[in-house]
Length: 254
Image 1 (cartoon, rainbow, N blue to C red):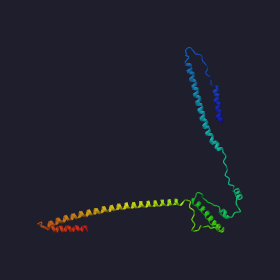
Image 2: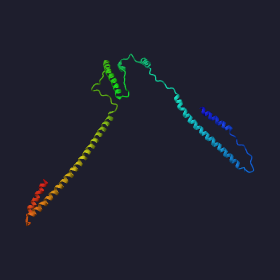
Image 3: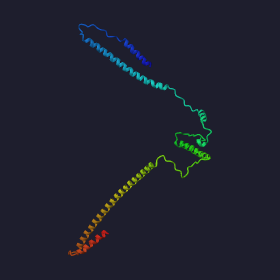
Image 4: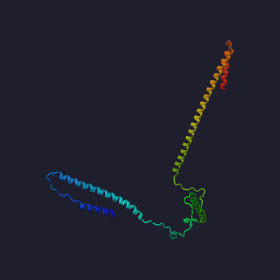
Protein backbone atom coordinates (compact mmCIF):
# COMPACT_ATOMS: atom_id res chain seq x y z
CA UNK A 1 0.00 0.00 0.00
CA UNK A 2 2.92 2.40 0.64
CA UNK A 3 4.11 2.00 -2.94
CA UNK A 4 0.69 2.85 -4.27
CA UNK A 5 0.43 6.04 -2.20
CA UNK A 6 3.93 7.11 -3.32
CA UNK A 7 2.97 6.68 -6.96
CA UNK A 8 -0.25 8.66 -6.51
CA UNK A 9 1.69 11.49 -4.81
CA UNK A 10 4.23 11.59 -7.64
CA UNK A 11 1.44 11.69 -10.19
CA UNK A 12 -0.27 14.62 -8.44
CA UNK A 13 3.04 16.50 -8.15
CA UNK A 14 3.74 15.93 -11.83
CA UNK A 15 0.36 17.33 -12.85
CA UNK A 16 0.87 20.43 -10.69
CA UNK A 17 4.36 21.17 -12.09
CA UNK A 18 3.54 20.72 -15.81
CA UNK A 19 3.71 24.12 -17.56
CA UNK A 20 0.53 25.37 -19.09
CA UNK A 21 0.44 26.37 -22.67
CA UNK A 22 0.39 30.15 -22.86
CA UNK A 23 -1.25 32.01 -25.60
CA UNK A 24 1.33 33.24 -28.08
CA UNK A 25 0.64 36.20 -30.22
CA UNK A 26 0.55 35.54 -33.88
CA UNK A 27 3.71 36.38 -35.78
CA UNK A 28 3.59 37.81 -39.24
CA UNK A 29 5.49 34.87 -40.78
CA UNK A 30 3.29 32.23 -39.02
CA UNK A 31 -0.31 31.91 -40.06
CA UNK A 32 -3.21 31.74 -37.61
CA UNK A 33 -4.13 28.19 -38.64
CA UNK A 34 -0.75 26.59 -37.73
CA UNK A 35 -0.75 27.57 -34.02
CA UNK A 36 -3.86 25.56 -32.94
CA UNK A 37 -2.49 22.50 -34.68
CA UNK A 38 0.77 22.63 -32.70
CA UNK A 39 -1.11 23.15 -29.43
CA UNK A 40 -3.42 20.24 -30.17
CA UNK A 41 -0.45 17.96 -30.95
CA UNK A 42 1.24 18.88 -27.66
CA UNK A 43 -1.97 18.21 -25.70
CA UNK A 44 -2.42 14.87 -27.45
CA UNK A 45 1.17 13.87 -26.59
CA UNK A 46 0.60 14.79 -22.95
CA UNK A 47 -2.62 12.75 -22.85
CA UNK A 48 -0.88 9.72 -24.33
CA UNK A 49 1.96 10.02 -21.80
CA UNK A 50 -0.53 10.24 -18.93
CA UNK A 51 -2.45 7.19 -20.19
CA UNK A 52 0.76 5.17 -20.52
CA UNK A 53 1.79 6.23 -16.99
CA UNK A 54 -1.61 5.17 -15.62
CA UNK A 55 -1.42 1.77 -17.34
CA UNK A 56 2.11 1.23 -16.05
CA UNK A 57 1.05 2.14 -12.52
CA UNK A 58 -1.91 -0.26 -12.68
CA UNK A 59 0.36 -3.08 -13.82
CA UNK A 60 2.79 -2.29 -11.01
CA UNK A 61 -0.11 -2.27 -8.52
CA UNK A 62 -1.23 -5.72 -9.70
CA UNK A 63 2.29 -7.14 -9.58
CA UNK A 64 2.83 -5.56 -6.15
CA UNK A 65 -0.37 -7.10 -4.82
CA UNK A 66 0.66 -10.51 -6.18
CA UNK A 67 4.04 -10.17 -4.52
CA UNK A 68 2.43 -9.23 -1.21
CA UNK A 69 0.03 -12.23 -1.16
CA UNK A 70 2.65 -14.95 -0.47
CA UNK A 71 4.13 -12.81 2.30
CA UNK A 72 0.72 -12.53 3.95
CA UNK A 73 0.13 -16.25 3.56
CA UNK A 74 3.51 -17.06 5.05
CA UNK A 75 2.80 -14.73 7.94
CA UNK A 76 -0.27 -16.73 9.01
CA UNK A 77 0.33 -18.67 12.20
CA UNK A 78 0.31 -22.46 12.00
CA UNK A 79 -1.98 -24.12 14.52
CA UNK A 80 -0.27 -26.68 16.65
CA UNK A 81 -1.73 -30.19 16.60
CA UNK A 82 -3.02 -31.17 20.01
CA UNK A 83 -3.80 -34.72 21.10
CA UNK A 84 -5.01 -34.34 24.66
CA UNK A 85 -5.93 -37.92 25.51
CA UNK A 86 -6.69 -37.13 29.15
CA UNK A 87 -9.23 -34.46 28.17
CA UNK A 88 -10.90 -36.75 25.63
CA UNK A 89 -11.17 -39.57 28.17
CA UNK A 90 -12.62 -37.17 30.74
CA UNK A 91 -15.22 -35.86 28.28
CA UNK A 92 -16.10 -39.42 27.19
CA UNK A 93 -16.63 -40.47 30.79
CA UNK A 94 -18.84 -37.41 31.33
CA UNK A 95 -21.51 -38.37 28.77
CA UNK A 96 -21.01 -42.14 28.91
CA UNK A 97 -24.15 -44.17 29.69
CA UNK A 98 -23.08 -46.27 32.64
CA UNK A 99 -26.38 -47.64 33.94
CA UNK A 100 -27.44 -49.40 30.70
CA UNK A 101 -26.79 -53.11 30.15
CA UNK A 102 -24.14 -54.09 27.63
CA UNK A 103 -26.66 -55.47 25.15
CA UNK A 104 -28.07 -51.94 24.68
CA UNK A 105 -24.74 -50.44 23.61
CA UNK A 106 -22.67 -53.42 22.39
CA UNK A 107 -19.43 -51.52 22.83
CA UNK A 108 -16.20 -53.51 22.84
CA UNK A 109 -12.71 -52.19 23.48
CA UNK A 110 -9.67 -54.13 22.39
CA UNK A 111 -7.44 -55.40 25.16
CA UNK A 112 -4.27 -54.10 23.49
CA UNK A 113 -3.74 -51.04 21.30
CA UNK A 114 -3.07 -51.58 17.62
CA UNK A 115 0.65 -51.25 16.95
CA UNK A 116 1.98 -51.42 13.40
CA UNK A 117 5.73 -51.13 12.98
CA UNK A 118 5.56 -50.04 9.33
CA UNK A 119 2.28 -48.32 8.49
CA UNK A 120 3.19 -48.40 4.78
CA UNK A 121 3.30 -52.21 4.84
CA UNK A 122 -0.16 -53.33 3.73
CA UNK A 123 0.22 -56.88 5.03
CA UNK A 124 1.18 -55.83 8.58
CA UNK A 125 -1.53 -53.18 8.71
CA UNK A 126 -4.31 -55.50 7.50
CA UNK A 127 -3.12 -58.27 9.84
CA UNK A 128 -3.36 -55.90 12.82
CA UNK A 129 -6.91 -54.91 11.82
CA UNK A 130 -7.85 -58.57 11.38
CA UNK A 131 -6.56 -59.55 14.81
CA UNK A 132 -8.39 -56.65 16.45
CA UNK A 133 -11.67 -57.54 14.70
CA UNK A 134 -11.30 -61.24 15.55
CA UNK A 135 -10.78 -60.49 19.24
CA UNK A 136 -13.82 -58.20 19.26
CA UNK A 137 -15.97 -60.86 17.54
CA UNK A 138 -15.01 -63.56 20.06
CA UNK A 139 -15.61 -61.28 23.04
CA UNK A 140 -18.89 -60.04 21.58
CA UNK A 141 -20.14 -63.61 21.04
CA UNK A 142 -19.52 -64.44 24.71
CA UNK A 143 -21.21 -61.25 25.92
CA UNK A 144 -24.24 -61.78 23.69
CA UNK A 145 -24.71 -65.33 24.95
CA UNK A 146 -24.25 -64.12 28.54
CA UNK A 147 -27.01 -61.56 27.96
CA UNK A 148 -29.39 -64.35 26.88
CA UNK A 149 -29.66 -63.30 23.23
CA UNK A 150 -29.20 -65.45 20.17
CA UNK A 151 -25.92 -64.90 18.36
CA UNK A 152 -26.60 -66.99 15.24
CA UNK A 153 -29.81 -66.69 13.27
CA UNK A 154 -32.02 -69.78 12.86
CA UNK A 155 -31.80 -71.89 9.74
CA UNK A 156 -35.34 -71.02 8.60
CA UNK A 157 -34.76 -67.28 8.96
CA UNK A 158 -35.17 -65.22 5.81
CA UNK A 159 -33.98 -61.66 5.98
CA UNK A 160 -36.08 -59.00 4.33
CA UNK A 161 -34.73 -58.09 0.93
CA UNK A 162 -34.03 -54.49 0.07
CA UNK A 163 -35.27 -55.10 -3.48
CA UNK A 164 -38.71 -56.38 -4.43
CA UNK A 165 -39.43 -59.81 -5.86
CA UNK A 166 -40.33 -58.29 -9.23
CA UNK A 167 -36.96 -56.59 -9.44
CA UNK A 168 -35.14 -59.78 -8.47
CA UNK A 169 -37.18 -61.71 -11.06
CA UNK A 170 -36.07 -59.24 -13.73
CA UNK A 171 -32.45 -59.66 -12.64
CA UNK A 172 -32.80 -63.45 -12.70
CA UNK A 173 -34.37 -63.35 -16.16
CA UNK A 174 -31.61 -61.06 -17.38
CA UNK A 175 -28.96 -63.48 -16.09
CA UNK A 176 -30.74 -66.39 -17.78
CA UNK A 177 -30.92 -64.48 -21.06
CA UNK A 178 -27.23 -63.63 -20.86
CA UNK A 179 -26.30 -67.27 -20.19
CA UNK A 180 -28.57 -68.44 -23.03
CA UNK A 181 -27.07 -65.95 -25.48
CA UNK A 182 -23.58 -66.99 -24.40
CA UNK A 183 -24.43 -70.65 -24.90
CA UNK A 184 -25.97 -69.92 -28.31
CA UNK A 185 -22.87 -68.03 -29.41
CA UNK A 186 -20.65 -70.90 -28.27
CA UNK A 187 -22.83 -73.42 -30.13
CA UNK A 188 -22.72 -71.29 -33.28
CA UNK A 189 -18.95 -71.04 -33.00
CA UNK A 190 -18.66 -74.81 -32.58
CA UNK A 191 -20.95 -75.40 -35.56
CA UNK A 192 -18.84 -73.07 -37.69
CA UNK A 193 -15.71 -74.95 -36.67
CA UNK A 194 -17.37 -78.29 -37.45
CA UNK A 195 -18.56 -76.96 -40.78
CA UNK A 196 -15.06 -75.83 -41.66
CA UNK A 197 -13.69 -79.21 -40.60
CA UNK A 198 -16.39 -81.02 -42.60
CA UNK A 199 -15.61 -79.00 -45.69
CA UNK A 200 -11.95 -79.74 -45.23
CA UNK A 201 -12.60 -83.47 -44.91
CA UNK A 202 -14.91 -83.38 -47.92
CA UNK A 203 -12.30 -81.64 -50.04
CA UNK A 204 -9.67 -84.14 -48.93
CA UNK A 205 -11.98 -87.04 -49.85
CA UNK A 206 -12.68 -85.55 -53.26
CA UNK A 207 -8.99 -85.06 -53.93
CA UNK A 208 -8.28 -88.62 -52.82
CA UNK A 209 -11.00 -89.99 -55.12
CA UNK A 210 -9.71 -87.97 -58.05
CA UNK A 211 -6.22 -89.27 -57.38
CA UNK A 212 -7.45 -92.87 -57.21
CA UNK A 213 -9.46 -92.41 -60.39
CA UNK A 214 -6.49 -91.00 -62.27
CA UNK A 215 -4.30 -93.84 -61.01
CA UNK A 216 -6.91 -96.40 -62.09
CA UNK A 217 -7.19 -94.86 -65.55
CA UNK A 218 -3.44 -95.00 -65.93
CA UNK A 219 -3.41 -98.66 -64.92
CA UNK A 220 -6.19 -99.44 -67.38
CA UNK A 221 -4.31 -97.76 -70.19
CA UNK A 222 -1.20 -99.73 -69.35
CA UNK A 223 -3.22 -102.93 -69.19
CA UNK A 224 -4.79 -102.27 -72.58
CA UNK A 225 -1.42 -101.54 -74.12
CA UNK A 226 0.14 -104.70 -72.64
CA UNK A 227 -2.73 -106.90 -73.77
CA UNK A 228 -2.68 -105.47 -77.27
CA UNK A 229 1.05 -106.08 -77.47
CA UNK A 230 0.69 -109.73 -76.34
CA UNK A 231 -2.12 -110.32 -78.82
CA UNK A 232 -0.34 -110.43 -82.19
CA UNK A 233 -3.31 -110.54 -84.54
CA UNK A 234 -5.39 -108.15 -82.56
CA UNK A 235 -8.00 -110.85 -82.03
CA UNK A 236 -7.74 -110.57 -78.26
CA UNK A 237 -11.23 -110.84 -76.91
CA UNK A 238 -12.66 -107.40 -76.26
CA UNK A 239 -15.18 -108.95 -73.89
CA UNK A 240 -12.38 -110.32 -71.78
CA UNK A 241 -10.73 -106.91 -71.72
CA UNK A 242 -13.96 -105.20 -70.69
CA UNK A 243 -14.43 -107.79 -67.95
CA UNK A 244 -10.98 -107.03 -66.63
CA UNK A 245 -11.70 -103.29 -66.70
CA UNK A 246 -15.04 -103.70 -64.91
CA UNK A 247 -13.40 -105.90 -62.31
CA UNK A 248 -10.74 -103.24 -61.71
CA UNK A 249 -13.41 -100.54 -61.39
CA UNK A 250 -15.38 -102.60 -58.87
CA UNK A 251 -12.27 -103.13 -56.82
CA UNK A 252 -11.55 -99.40 -56.91
CA UNK A 253 -15.07 -98.60 -55.68
CA UNK A 254 -14.78 -101.05 -52.83
